[in-house]
Every structure is written in C-alpha cells, then in structure tokens.
Length: 605
Ligand code: M6R
Image (cartoon, rainbow, N blue to C red):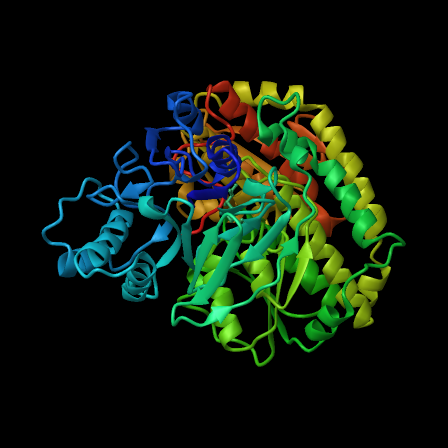
C-alpha cells in the first residue's frame, strides 16, 4: 500500500504531485506529504495527517518547485500522524525519502549504524534515509554509492519502492524497488516516477518498467538503470492506453455505486471482447499450456479469492480438470501436496497484491506455468505470469471491490468454456455462455434499477445491529462469504458468511433478537435445506431475509433475482448484497469508498 509519485524537469511540480497523489489515494489515505525543490536554492516539505485534501489545503502559492516527490500513506510502522507521514528526511535535512513497503531489518540497521542519531518518527523508512546520510557525511560516499550500500544492507525479504531526493542535486530522483510496484513515466522535458500508470496518465502514456533490485536515476532528460551490482541496463519504454476520464465519479455520490451500476456494461463488454461469435477468443498458447495441466490452482486474496471459489465449480464442470482455490497469504507458506502438472491461475484486480505475488515468485522459481486474470494491464502479476487475461472492468476506485468480482468470474467462465471446448467436453461445447452473459447483463441492470427497494431494506434491517450473517450452501456459500466481506468492510457491521448447514454446529449461539440472517438461495438441490436453516435462526429471534432466484421464490422472500444458469448465479446474487452493503454504509454517514484501516491495493505481506 502507500502511493508514491515524483517528477523532475521543466514543469511546475506541485500540481503534478497533488494530482498524482489524488489518483493514488486508493492505496492509503491516513496521511500525505510532498517535498519540492525549485532547483534555485529553495525547497519545501509539507505533510499532513488525513486525506490529500488536507495536504492540498496546507500548500500556499509560495510553494514552488520543478522537482519533487510525494506520498500517501497506509501506516505500517508508527501511528498515522504528521511526523510519521512521508517524506521522511535525514537529520541534516539534506535527503528526503518516500517509501512503500516494509524494511524487515530496520531495527538491526538502526542498532548497528545509527545509535547516536535522534529519530523523529517511528517509521522503518526514516532508518533508510538517515543511513544514506550517514554514509555520505561520515564516509564521504557520493549519494549513489551510499544509497547502493544501504540497498545492499536491507534484508532481501523486505519490500520497498523508494523515491529519494538529495537537495544538493535537486534535479535528480533516486528510485529503487523490491517486491513493491513502481514505474517510470517519460514525458517531454520532464520525467516521473509513480506507483502506477494511472498516477501519471495526465502527463504521459509512455512508461518504463523497473525490476526488483534495480537502481534508477531519474533526471529531467535522462533515465538510467543499473542493477545493485552496478551493471547498466537498457529497457524499451511501453505505452499504455488508458482513459483517464474513466476515473471520474460523474453524478454518483460514491465510486462504489457507480461501479456496482457498471457491472451490466462490463458483462456486455466482455461478451464483445471474448465471445464475439459465441466461441471464446482465447490465446491458443495459453490453452495449449492449460491442456497439459492435471490440476488448476486458483490463487487470490479477499474478493479475488471469493471470485476463485465461484470459478472453481465452473472450471470443474466445463473442463473436467480438478480445480482448487487458495488464499495467497496461506499458500505462499503452506500449500497442499501439488499434482504432477500444476497450472496456476492468479486472480487479482490490481495485479499488485503482495501475498499473491509471493506465490507467483515461487511458481516461477519452479517454472510452473501461470496465468494472471487482472484488471490492470502491465501490473506486476501480469508482467510476471506467463499469460494474462484482462477483465475489462475499467478502473475500480472504491476500496470495496464489486465489478472486478463479477468480471473475474465471467472471465473464468470464458476461459473454462474455451479449454473445455478444446478438450471436446460436451458440457463446454453446449454451454450457451454468450447468451447467458447477455442475459446476466440485463438481470444486473434490473437489480440496480430497483436499488431504492434495497436501500429501504438496508435502512430497516441493517442500520442498527452489530452482527449479521449471510448463509448459503455450495456456490451460495461462496457468495455469502463475499457478501459478508462487503458488508463488514464498509459498514463495520460484524458479518460472517456461513455454510448454512454448519450454523447449528456452534455459531447459532450468536443469534439474538433481530440479528439479520440473510439466506442466498439459487440452487435447486439446496434451496429447501437453506430455507430450513433460516427458519432455525428465526425460531431463535433472527430477522431473516432472502436473496432468491425467481424460480425458487416464495411469497415472503425479500429480494427476488432473475433466473440464470446455475453455474453462473454468483454473477447476479452478489449484486443485491453489494447494494445492501453500500446503503448500510451510506445510512451510517461513512465514507463508503474509503473505509477505515483499509487500502485498495495491498502491497505488503
Ligand atoms: O487487487 P486484488 O484483487 O489482488 O486485491 C485482493 C484484495 O485485497 C481485495 O479483493 C479486497 O479484499 C477487496 N478490497 C475487498 O472488497
């Protein structure tokens, strides 16, 4: 997490930095800061607790610079306050550093080299910048040599993206990374560094990758790259087609509502992209690699993990290949006995999740084949996997993931059909995916058109309780997990997704008068059982609600959703739950898009 931006050259830096930080605010928003230098002997450091708007308000017209670095923080070491905000700087106020990641051995470095230094902050970052200063001032190293020495001293398990400035070389930004994302942006007469392409897209669409363990020196008219062992590197820039206006909120009060509404058009876009004539258009090399697999391992975190659970049964039904789904932070350190010919599918909206990347690093070490399904082209997970499929959802800004979940499941279904057809599996050949997805697009639209009713249900049932449960069986259980995550992360109602049959084995003890229990019912085989489980909770005082497929509905059901193929019901049953979460958060007056303690892109393990 944390967002980094930097610029040096022939443009005024303050507005570029602030604009970049606003685009990066999704990565963390507990404090922010900038350091700018006018390359004429004047420099400015401004930091504020809270949102970028607080920082912006603190910058007056006198603050001017042609180079600078900025940061928006998601705290790891030290509480969110002005002192711990970045840039961190050396005691003599010569070096300024912004950092995203965690320096694992910062305490040892402090102990070994900096016992006599007075530290202002509680951050691991300050140790790095003080250490650079120590090597420059005490051992007369030049800045680059000192930084390289520090980079070599940092424990390799650490994660970092750094941008550093030396006030004595005001036109230069020193950049390095390991595990955390960072890109160079190339413009006319000025160059940039940023945590993602979107943070620089208003200035340029030309970018250059940085690999782990590289030091990059960014000057107004030149960018040089070398490895930590001082080998010069040459790299071609690439361009990114990105519509910056796609990040506008338009008439919506919050991005989350816009993104929920966009799900129907994302479905239509996916149909056009991948299923123009009904048969999936998928890279032959990817399918050939997957044909050799005896087991598909789906890896993801949070909502992406939940999208994997929904995809699992689609892969098994349409390809006949055993498929399992794993939480990346667990799989990286303890995984089951693997099959002989594994194939790994990474699901990640951002393509930057550190836990998932850790698994990919290990997969690559073993040379196992891999695919990333992501929303962000050229993201780390996309670059480092063998293959990429894009989910075409457009930028997702709200921290609570909505359209990425449904788009990931749709792309899983498209891939499963393509692979199943190649294997001549009749279930895949017969599966009318194009018409189903078009039908689903209409169904989502019908649900979002009826959002007022869902707002009223949220106000009635979810505004007051501290706890709530979503329950279901089979794939409805996997949707219950996602529905509960949505509700808890933005409304702070303690909510759990539960296998409905499992409640009576202990958890039912938590049911009190008026505890909302929301049943998801879309599967013929299990509908009656889930209804019985709901009644068991009602007998103990629960307020029961239902999200039910039309053909299974009864008179007193709460929300009735259109019928779709049983394999694809998560694409539609999640939508009312997203809206329930949204309106509960809105009703409580919370910042729906930026819930407390969270960040959109989780780039620390
Ligand atoms: O970018 P990713 O899909 O890899 O992110 C994984 C999770 O951090 C993410 O899905 C998170 O759970 C959502 N913000 C929840 O809404």
